[in-house]
Image (cartoon, rainbow, N blue to C red; front, side, top):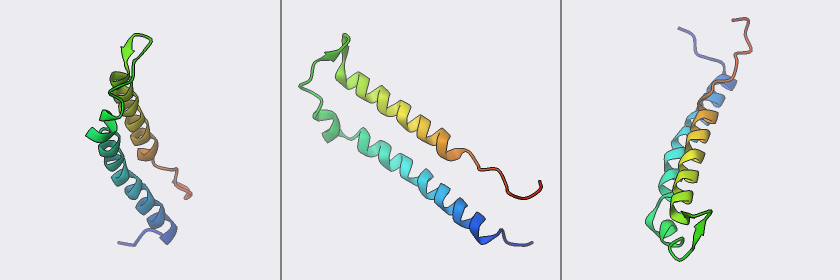
Length: 78
């Protein structure tokens, strides 16, 4: 079996590194100290700020996962 070209390996490695960073970002965004910083704030349109923050962070993580999971088209004839 032949090895993929170096540029394809580099692209794959970058994609894997980004995929590993998403859970780390999620842990940081939803960590207790960050959440506690929002405790004294009021509501946005009647919804508590903590809820808005949690669901916004959750949506961001999902969008990043979708964005980084897409594979680029191959430059070959296939």
